[in-house]
Length: 440
Image (cartoon, rainbow, N blue to C red; front, side, top):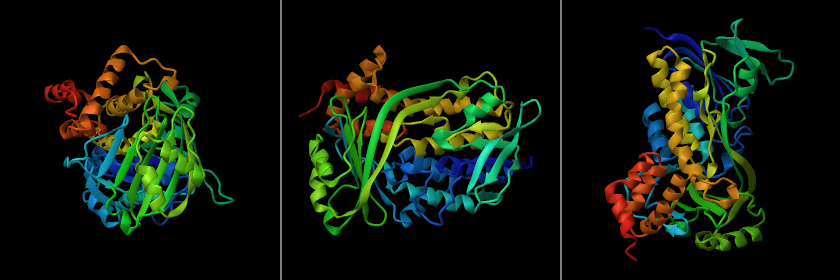
């Protein structure tokens, strides 16, 4: 069967770019509309305010991007990304325990968010039939008279003197992120807004960039120190392209990282591990502080809606905005793009229903990992269900064991990287090791 005429993707972030790639197999033309003026290289942009902070591309996300863009991993490394083993190359301090840093075979690439996005954008820009319209505001959805089908979007260029116009589409995909107006548009069209699950986390993070110099050669590619009950401070130090380190310090449930050099040193000294405190005296500052806040994680349950217009979908952070500490956003967006490719090409009777139902399955595991961890903090104000409390006690013991047992550490990191489901941590071999306890 021939290709359908035209799809429109709203947003040129990771979710929008990967969605465009997914749709290019089925549609003759794919138009990507972006509010920002897109940079010519791997540069920060206003519409991605979190872009200068540490970003993680989980192992499952890297595999998804490789599926969508064969050779992407090699391209990313050629552009300066640092390939390494996720277990031995990154020191994971969880609940105050360093997971044993032995080789695992789990491969990742450390790179900045602008470099990852630019690499994807370069690939998408070379696809036949794909065009970009940047520096453009999205005004509204255009529908049939009975509002049963979306037939395009109303837009207006941000260039002075421009007038509104309509871009027609057989399918519109909203990838505009956390600030998506899809619920408002649905309400205006007479449809219910999606139920949402919101967890207030009140995260602040402050990022600094440092030179990566020869005397840093012995340092791991990344060092992560997570927050946990009784310690609401966290941080991630990651080597990236351009001989740089990115240090993002964070605080959850009202904890505020400092934005001055002396405060940073005191913050580093207060953490349960000395890695950052040891690093700072050896490092030359490039820039910082760069501040950002993240009030709450939000999951919108479009899969629970009884009615929804044809010709419209929502993807990426517009579906679920995760706690950025867990580095899940880019990876989940790429996984959803693979799903989008399959659902659209299958031409099921109800594309939206099929996509949202299966996307909810993709979201469930990372949401459970992140929300379950956040609810451990008494400051969350949420009493975790009994099952979660039992699991959290088990995980607390698992972290202690994983400091000595490389197999247990690897099993946990496979779940964290969305390669295995959490129930794999209860497999007999792992459960026996956890029950036995640490050797030391």
